[in-house]
Image (cartoon, rainbow, N blue to C red; front, side, top):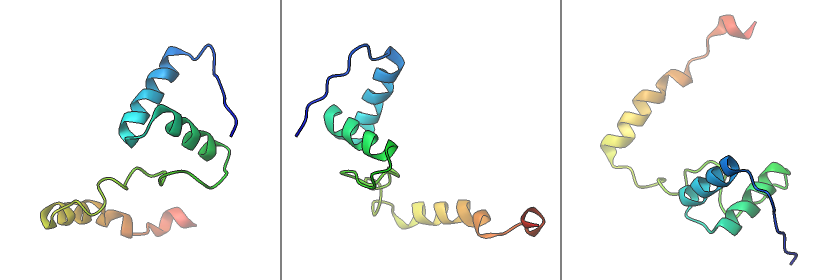
Length: 83
């Protein structure tokens, strides 16, 4: 394993990385590795990239019904936009 030190990290990037670390519930190191792997299209991370792994399976029936009603519109194809 190689080590990497990043110097001069811009404050906004450091803040975004810290927020992403918290969202994923991973270490800053693992978050950086995952993001680099995604950015370089290596096709691997320690978790899926869509962020749904935590809430998946935790909705109750009422919440599931709400999501399904809210996303029904995406099942319709507007033919005039496909010409």
